[in-house]
Image 1 (cartoon, rainbow, N blue to C red):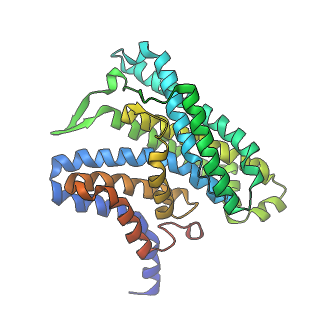
Image 2: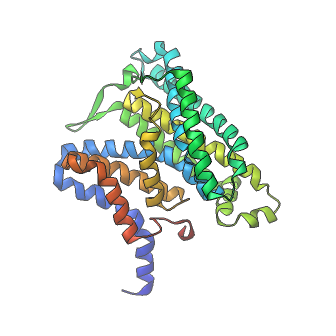
Image 3: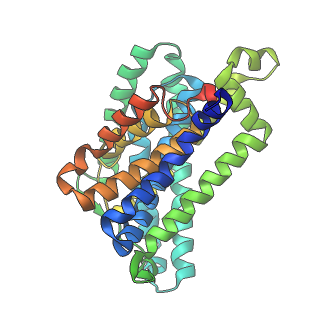
Length: 330
């Protein structure tokens, strides 16, 4: 094989991992369970992507490893509880249009609340620890604890039910395979947001500046752009995405508690490492792989489900030590 072909194979190999995993799982479980679990895994992956993509943007541009990211996930979930509680008349109706309208309002409210909290967080805390990794870890872990306690003060310490809207509680059948309606809606929402992110990052001036800032922020500043304003915008967008992910995950679980963000932290960081730190495209692939692996292994070998994603991360890092799509290769 020529060097040119080896380089092409190396370039496209990360994109082939997901279809290879999906096809490899088919003989092991049969068409019916395979289709159901694949849709479930893709849905889980989309929600994980929403939670992880914001942290990826923040780390890639700002070089800030924000361990308080879980707080923004939790905030989004609790805001959804409040909004959907006030829209109970819409969510208990069998009208799909009213159900989707309620979800959309909850999604927008979760994004706005988490983004606003992110703005305050960046202004008061993050801006003081740029370029100081150890201080970033210490101060964001402390902030996480404080925000979680404030959430308990506002919403109480007990878990709060977050039932799915009436029209999204059933299932639809693809052939003989039942697919939960809410999963299809969540999958569509995740794909739309991922597509919008891709368009913004690749087709707009702001996206070009963000990608250029990731590569060389000094160059962006030398061209007369205010990298500081870009930092603030990216932080708000990243925390808003976390809130959206928290809202979708809370609705998926039908129960919200103050630890809902913490419970996702390990998976979020696994996705960041698998994809390549700071890479949004890598984050997308990593989230899909984590969602599919979790669902497949839980069906085939439930006792191995807990460590399956860590094993996935180890295998990928043995193959590509910098992750699937490190920034330097995009």
